[in-house]
Length: 332
Image (tube, rainbow, N blue to C red; front, side):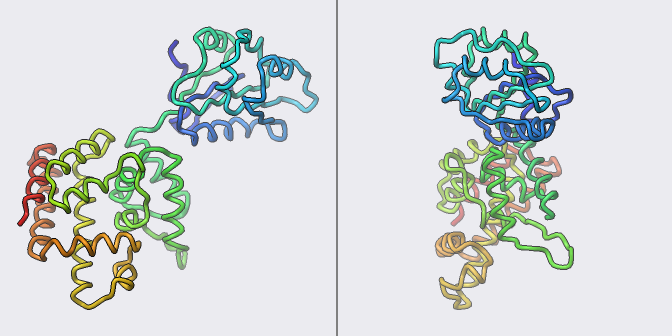
């Protein structure tokens, strides 16, 4: 059965006319909460949240059949996937008029059998898949969230954050909270701007896939691993311009770490001098020992040249990345 309005939970929760029921599945927990919050706004003081592992279908049928003395009622059944493990295939007989039932299943695959989904459709219920957004959708969400929170953000910073933290809104929300706390409050009503270097020093990498793998591979001059890491980033929605910006920002940090070392700045004072997290400072300092100023200058110049040619359409993006990564990794 094809999902009805499947993008509903990932496109900003624009519900239109409320349905009598919403069956939500998918691992993106953020959209489960958003949908519940949006629907609940129409049921002030008359919403009840119940756990699916404690709610057999018979009890739910009885609950729906009870008259309400407080106006329209909203019932939210959390972790409803456990309800389908039992053999009761009667499920529910109906949803009272003007009321609403939400069944949330925060799991990747739809746990409901086809017969339930057919009955759900006949009852007027809607099926919603809470999927992870695409790269552009996640980037748009970050930009809008930052603006609502009273900050500005560069396009490079947005792309860096999504690339590092992944496209999960759940993770992005947590990383933005950390970044905005690091930025602090604005003075005099002026909006502070979040730049790429702030993202690089604050954001935690996706535990499964991360852009830091590419940075590490290039810094170690391992061309094979660098290409593999780039292809992984590309599969997750990253584009060559964004990847070049990430590399340039990191190499710039390595340059500043090398300058700080020549000035006699101690390792303990290095994070403050560079304005980055201690881990980032330590990593840049370690890599600075393996790159001369001449090599860093050539690398940054090469990145600027390739970046300009790609943006002007003078160089195929994929060939440009092959050329850039192989050149950086062969630097002597």
